[in-house]
Length: 196
Image (cartoon, rainbow, N blue to C red; front, side, top):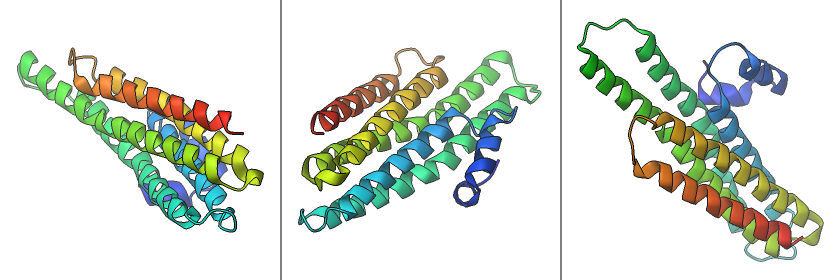
């Protein structure tokens, strides 16, 4: 596994090889985070290209950059946390079964935190993309709407990972939160697509 900066420093081909390798990390959580980062980059581009027609475009571009950096870092954090949980599950333990189960539950609950943050970032990107799509230069409106769709797809994927990682914790509110945020992102994507 590589740190977040290295993910961004790798060639796309090498990154695709890493994801496709027969190892559990980087996996779909990291991919979802990178999709969110790419969507935020597209939103930033659309905002920057709209400065001549939209006074607040610079502020939206800055927001998009902040979201891009946040999502890119989550690609590494997601892989690291999930890898830690898998290592704990694979390691031999002399604890009583109930103590081991408790420790494993905590490790996987901790592994669910980055996907929830990815869902939150994706929802933020979808919301910003919708706003940009409604105000930007018409030449890049479809790009902003497409970015909203990409963010919504990543939000849905990450929400599923939250649910999977928290299966041992029945009724965990984070599952509901993740699904609500993913639904909100999907709503924003539909609104953005409607503006094209």
